[in-house]
Image 1: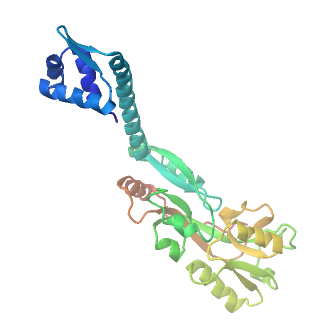
Image 2 (image 1 turned 90 degrees about the horizontal axis):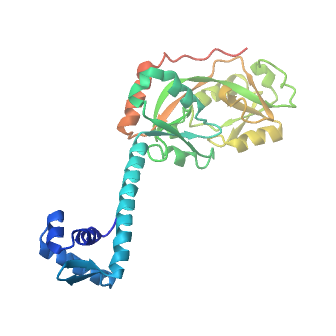
Image 3 (image 1 turned 90 degrees about the vertical axis):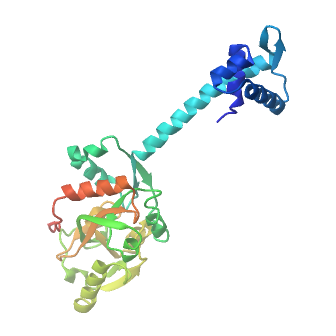
Length: 308
């Protein structure tokens, strides 16, 4: 952080001689003289004068001596602060949060664990926002282990699961979101026959087994429902389009309040999608330990009852 020869200058000034400074620094008097000569050459300044009474600082030397003490003390404080920051970073879990994948379920999990997480009692949580962009979400998932320690969200995506570990915590029921001015908006529960003649927006086939099974069922037994593909991953634009175009949108119960122009209604079916913790394929020891603690304290996974 600073030129070590400044410490030699301070020792020489405080001791008044090369010999005494050498004893204090545990080096030879010759080494002290060489360091002083090198420092003066480096600064292009004369810092000391020699006289029969010992060593004295020149006016330039007095200024450098005073500032050197400050620089050394400031450097020590800076290094101490950096070490404290590093220790703090080592005891912090970074949790991703977005509109469609909010961190609240992780926060609930964290506080529900209570005394069982005593080994993490000194840990802090730091929320890291990210965008639900259907083109960029996979690059965010890849940042698990660097940008985030954890994400928590809905996941049965093959693409997502190829990039991270996933520990299921539960399931969310599949629902249908309808525009507020749609004739179905007042219904408390939908039957599939209510959707006949409507356009249902849902993710395209191939990435989500749950969605693919539901699509197969609709195409086989309810061809009167027109299915329109959305991008592989939802973002806010998908919800906007459903609200603006008056179309129905396949959604899940935790997204009830995503868009004020849409009302999410349960359907008389048994389709649910898993949600849980997402973390790096190569997690740190602390992340692995936390996951093990969650698994140890987790209640059996169950499908939430259909809201009525």
